[in-house]
Length: 120
Image (cartoon, rainbow, N blue to C red):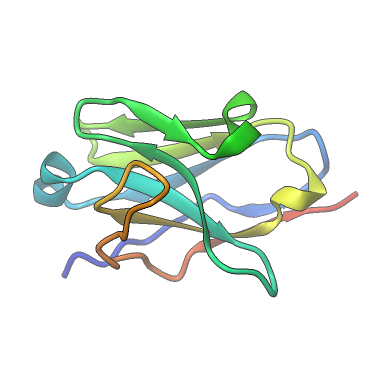
């Protein structure tokens, strides 16, 4: 019922940008923080960015310089803008409810994710 459906990924060249989308449930978006995660091939899923119900954002490590998380409460969608993409950003990107910080267990409504591939 609350399963999410991430979109917006694709094959891009280094230095290009993408905006990932995460349409959410209106009810759940009002109630919960949201976060983006990514999982590169052969690695564990990791926290990328989070946004709480009042719009406060949090980012992993040095990603703040190139990643921007936002939420559109009118359209019930959470976005992840990624600029200056690097090969190491290649991963499947997921969104989920429940967290806006790193050390937190999300609810588990993430979908299939959206693949980001960075290659020249």
